[in-house]
Length: 145
Image 1: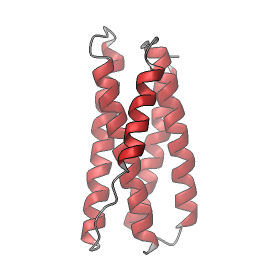
Image 2: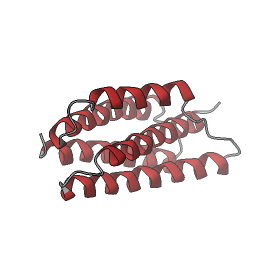
Image 3: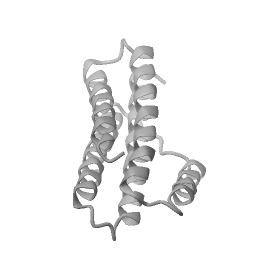
Image 4: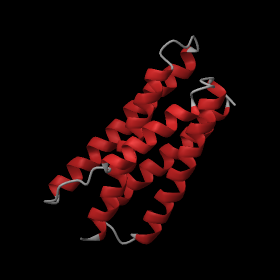
């Protein structure tokens, strides 16, 4: 498999995990009165979803099928979110979790961009868009700590 497909599948899976995680947190915070927090969740969900769809299209345009996150990883993430929010659903605690997730995203995206620096320009642009988005997310959640 070529580097373009490798990095696109990374973007696809990263943004898929982002949409799944935030969708779950939206459900958890549905009774929250912190509208600003919920609005940011919705905004980030929409951006992850856009990146997800863009990466899916780029993979298919190159004649491949995207690789979904495996079911075990999805279930594990779902359970971990439920455990970590069992006793504390506060915006501060959720922000800390989201910052940790985005930090992992920054590290992983940076590694992939460095590893596949010879990838097509449009692929690297999408990878950098994801990287910048993850960095912005880190900053956006800090105000709730």
